[in-house]
Structures are given as structure tokens and as C-alpha cells.
Picture (cartoon, rainbow, N blue to C red):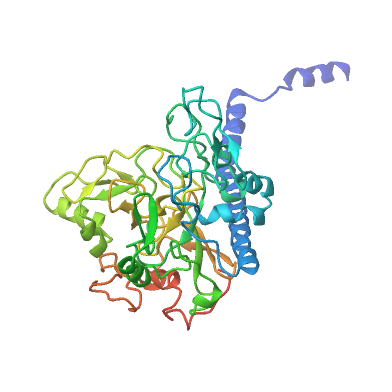
Length: 429
């Protein structure tokens, strides 16, 4: 028996190389199969967290209205001085006023008082003259683009989507820190003209009410937010469950993304009457055999066209979502003309102008939106948005003020008082 056992032991062997390779290959296949599922689960969790953050912002707007009788105003603040840093040019975003309602009371209190300026070169008040008295950042803060003001540099977690990896600036700016980002923007409706001014124009450093701009604003700004004008639930005759309040925007990571780096229309009137101008140019170039304007699906080709400019000279910090403090549409606004994740195009090579600015996100296939009643949904890139080549609504437009939105269901969702969605049911996806 002992001899037999030894023989049996001699014949017993471990895994062969072939068997080990088969096991390793099987494990690799299982990992390859499971990894996308794990990544999808993580992205679903991030998207849910993003929706929770957006809901907090939407509910904060509702609480703000309960306290002050209207929504926080997009483009508001102090004004009247031509001295840099002495006021904020009435340019603050609606997000600044929401800070006390999202548990950011210390930050709100810091903005509400004067602060001694910092000692670095980033200070807007810096002077080499030692005889000058100590200067202060003003109460309510300086301009949104002032560098070195600590509250503006804060990253507010509630204003960020966990799927967006962007942080800080795309490049160093003036040797100092830059302002924090946001992924949530105000709905300005299905128009664009006067989105950067509202009913005011600036004369010698002071905002002055202008009758013509007031009429243009009333005609074109049909969203829940109207620049420099308070709005409230009572203004939303379509119903707060049917009207868009907020949309998600993916912040710029540098590079040539069409939904984060702005193109610029060579002639603003062309963009006003053909908000799908980029695709018009693209079709023309294809038909003539020229190099395309776009790297499909979502990259600029990086050269200029007689109708669209891509290399505009805008700073790398003048891109989508890079300043939560700034109420200009590029940073904290969107319109419902083009569907989510389409190209953004400005009317001029400046950040303080209007443009065609759809929402965008780092989620697959769409973006989160919030209705005025606080409900949050995920909207597909394929939502019905009518024809992108229909003229926008403004005084003198072929699409006259008071017309139903020319941009399908998407445009109708963005307007506050046009009744297009009266027969649609409200509810989660």
C-alpha cells in the first residue's frame, strides 16, 4: 500500500501552463465584462448626485422666492463706479444670492462685508505707493472677473456635478488664483438678444434703463430668468411644472469641445436669424469640398470661416462654466434653441455678449434639467427641438414676439408664458 501511495503521489501534478493561461484569460474576460458595468454603475451614482445637487439649487430658488417675493436675479449687484474693484458692475449671477439657502452662510457673510485686499499681485486694488491708505474690497464684492478676491475663488460643492473633472482655470491667469466653476445655469428661454444686458445699457460706468432694450428684453427673454429683471411664479403662466428653471452645463477642460469652447459669429445678425449657423456653414463646406469646420462629433476643427470664427482670441478662462459668480450667459446661462450638447456660438469675441448657448454635460446622451417646481429630469440630446435654422424671437424678427416657440418641445419648455405644453403631463421620466 505504501508503494502504491508513493506512485500515486508521483503522478499527481499541479496546473499546466495551458490551464493557467486559460484561467488567466477567463479572469481577464470576466473583468472586461464587469468593468463597463462597474463604470456604468459609478456614472449612474454620479448622475444621481448631480441631480440631487441641482434639486438643492432649485429648492434654494424656491426658498429665496418665499423670503424675497421673487427669484434671485441673473445679472445683479452694485454699480456706478468706474474705479476697478469698487463695485461689481451689476454683473453677479443668481447663484451668489442663493448662498445662504444652500448652507453657505459663512461665504455669504464674507461677501456682505468689506475685506482688506490681499498682498499679492492679483489684487485689483494694489498700489506701489506706500502713502496710500489701506484699501478694501467693497461690500458685495468686486467685479466677477476681479482676481484675488477670496469669496469669488471658492468652489461651492452644491454647484458642481461629480461627473465633471474640471477644477480651477484652463491656464494661469495673471499670476493669481481664478474663480470657482459651476455646472448649473439659469434658463433664459428660447431667445438670445439682450441676454447679456437686460433692459439696461452702460453709460460712463453706470447702468441706465433703456426703453428700446426693455422692449427687446420683453420680446426675446421668454424664460424663467430675465437678465436684470426679477421674476416669480406668477409670471410663469405655462405652469411651474412645465417650465424650465435650470440646466446643466459641462465646464471647459481646455481643448476644442464645441459645447465648452465658444465659436463666434462673424456677423451677429446671421446668428440671430440662423442659430444653427454652424451646421449651415458645415453643409456649405462639404458641398464645396472644403475642409470641415467640425471634427465630428463634438470638436472644432480649429480654423476660421467667413461666417464662423473659432480661434477668437478669447482667454482660456472665458469658456463655459468657468465662473459661478458671473451672470453673463457664457458662464451661468443657457437657452432652449439648440438641444443639449450642441455647439455654443457667441455674437462677438467677448464674454459679455449674447449667444446660442445650449446646456451640456459629462453624462452620456443628454443633460440634467430642473423645472420651476423643483422637479429634476434627464433630457436627451435627441429631444424634439424643431428647426435650428428658424430665426430667434426679437423685435423685427420673421418669428415675431408672442409666437409659439420655433424650437419644438425643447423651445416650448424654455418659455414661461406661451402655453405650448398645456396638454403635456408632468412627471418623472
